[in-house]
Length: 396
Image 1 (spheres, rainbow, N blue to C red):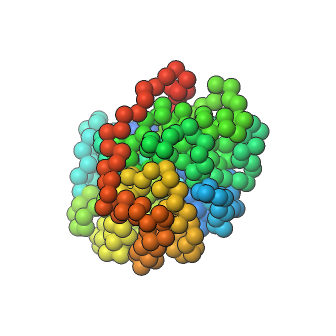
Image 2 (tube, rainbow, N blue to C red):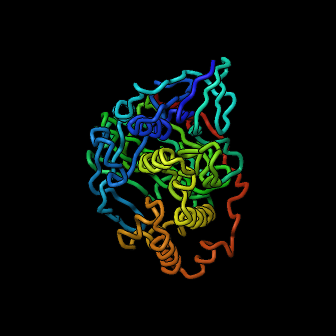
Image 3 (cartoon, rainbow, N blue to C red):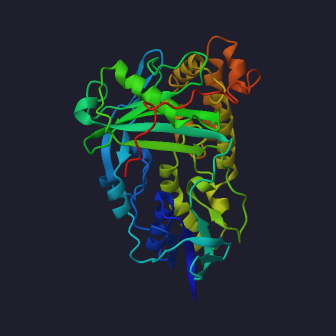
């Protein structure tokens, strides 16, 4: 059976669902493919509130953090509201009632056709592939292990409306000669707080049992006792998927599969939402969606951020603290250029240069730019898991 559409979106994570929804709003004939199209996505999704596009209602926000905190050598308050998104409300805000949704697995994804496991062939003028990230292998990665703690239990460390974006305090039990990691912790708006030890930039990532051990050490340092029944969340994915090549008649990789995963932070959802209308407008005009999504300014921005990723992956804990201390002294525009702007390459170049030039001691700058210790943590022998550090399963 063959069906014809203006666009077929393969993969209905938040990015693919947003693209399909905005195509429907624009009047396109939309097909969407996913083995479980109505599932509730497992990961926790967060972003800066000012990154959300105007068309997405703020009712999808589950938890607001007006002034999130970064800990380096001291507490730094970021005057930029941050939020955690409600997965059920986000899914409801992206309805696909006017699309033809196929609950199946795509076995072939071409520029004009998608074939499903049951033999169905879907033809479309544009095919967008939003099936997420490929296997990690030994690529530079984001790794995180989060434990969901009752809000009352978590209150001594993170209360309602508070949030720790990067907590570099020396409380995770790791020594100075071990790969660095930091704590991310925010209230989720459902009566729980996630405490998530995170590693960025290591080749192959950091093992879950190591991250769990460090998370437990931080909680113990603040007198937070767990029951042992708390659910957990695991994240482990590559950060270095580049933007796709331009060209009409290609499959359009979208979301994290299409270079929208931020190389330095691991965020992708807000950018995917913000760019959905750009892709749809190009399709309506018969133009190349990839070219519209990735003009040279955006490609240059990605290239500079990828250099930041390489720097992150070779620093020690002390160097990471010094680097972030330098970065968060920058202006709000400069911080946005690194953290969220899709194409502000001039401000990004300036903040990267200034971050390196204001990191002390001077010799640490050689590591930041890769002149020394380029592969410092390659093949690091993490200790094996113990019964205490094995995770308790993912949250559903």
